Length: 361
Image (cartoon, rainbow, N blue to C red):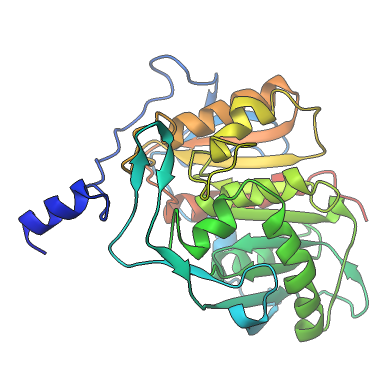
């Protein structure tokens, strides 16, 4: 694409402006950062402690992130879901190479004119540990943007060492695209219980049928997880349907203003979690593990609404959770970008162990 055409598209709001390089943030300098314990390089936070921790800059994979000799490996069941089968998500897409324009009357709103109905298919992968006993109502974790083989490997090793319960993992692919106007954006960035309702009514029954398992109805035995917008979706599932989910794990959570279409009840999208929802609501039965990187995303779109800094959003989340006395652990990772794979390989076993503390059948 020529520079002239790029400039025309950007000025017309039909192409995303160049994303600025994220600044490197130091949580021990400047204002606005939560008080946190800095860990020796290479160490993880203790799985039995709430609070805020700083780790890195070196990120070595935890031993549980590789296949271990003698450890039983779970079975993986795969199936496909089509938009034509869904009552809740019949499918949308945004035209390739387009984005949107900021509302001149409200920079917190993005006007998208190139989104339209479109079909999709999504993959679902179900991990069933070898230790699962047929007919047992098993605890489970639902993950976004699947399949997630890192999660399955970690569970093999953690279950074998009795660090977490014998659980099912349900890794759900998204419906395609990203951000406002896309199917993925609609599913993950919408501030409502809609995605949880989709999982409950359309995904979980298929999981039980395809993998021949029984899933617990106890919210203490149900967890959600995700990275980026999948992370904000994971929290929305537990927030809007706390009767279904009590445990949440997020990497680089998109607790920023990405919701589309706009909603007057939650005008700032997932930024509203730390802006007013958590501070102004009674404490819910949610236990949360969360991470952000020192080079995480910063204002990557045309809105310039001061609600698109992933580091600030996650720091504000930690403050809001602490003020309401939630059980949470917040990890600030040095030398880490958005959804950093190396950080996940270092921390996922500890995160899962923290997430499931206190669980009893």
